[in-house]
Image (cartoon, rainbow, N blue to C red; front, side):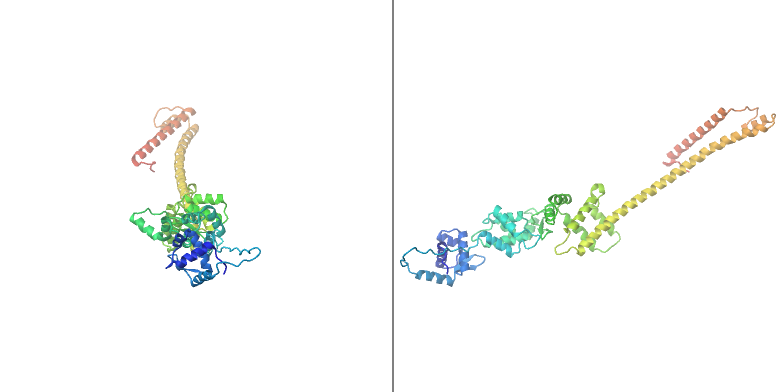
Length: 447
């Protein structure tokens, strides 16, 4: 068996003298070593089969029979070596097999499958970032670094829990311990009891999909931007789309699914389409073009193309997604139909107004026609009197003028003045009747 180093041997000797299994911190107090160094020495001895861990939760260690035999053989060796001539051969340097903290942390991540999927952040990138920004002795620092790299909340919990067990004598900070052990249900009870404020809903990104997570690391805008960039969108495009959708609130994705799911599963009933339209109007998805309605529908279409409107485990051809796309298409067609109906009603109303206007103009034309007939009648009378005997003219003219006496011949100017006066009288009469109708009936003149 290869010789072990002096400091490692001290750990084995101190542990063999203990009457019961001991913690790394207790051994460190005996030999004057730090608990973290004792942990590394114990890992080396464990690999050699000289010690064993007897308490997984309590982190207790004891010497094995092989370790006791090794110490016994070490004590039976002669105290002095025989003198030799020539240079004393140096023993080969023993290479420590104790894994570093980085190696331990990486090994845990590999066993948990971190970075195994194409959409996940590579494990090498995570380890590199943690080495540059975090302190592996500080569990809170490790947690924050994993959060900044977008590791899912449940993966972080398992990773940090297992890693904490490999650090002898290391206590988990209370704030981090609450995140690891208490969980969501306790927070909910405390919130209802009024002890803490309820946490805002957050999101996590797992395998390239946005998942609702009360302890998630992203709001909806950040999660959308992160996933869009993973799927090949440029940072500018992902940022602009995320900003446009975030104006609807951080619950946009959950709200749409919650609103559409009962409408998709519900049987078609009278008025269901109207209820659906009203629901989406309240969500602000069916605004007019000037209000940004069409742009929001476009954003939903973009989300569908990116595959973000999917539940966990559903593929691109899932029934829920196809039903959601069908509902959006039907709503768009329904809106177009409503606009056409509104335009058709406006045309009918305009046509009715034009009919009333034509009727009124026709009535005015008939009245003006009467003026023309009266003028023609007067002209005809004058023409008919031309061939009558001279001595009969006074008599006939008297009859047409409504009186006796000898009439006189009127000039064209006088005739025009008479017609003009007659037209003025009729116009005044029409205005008077219109005013009377307006006062009595409150509208346009009655027929």
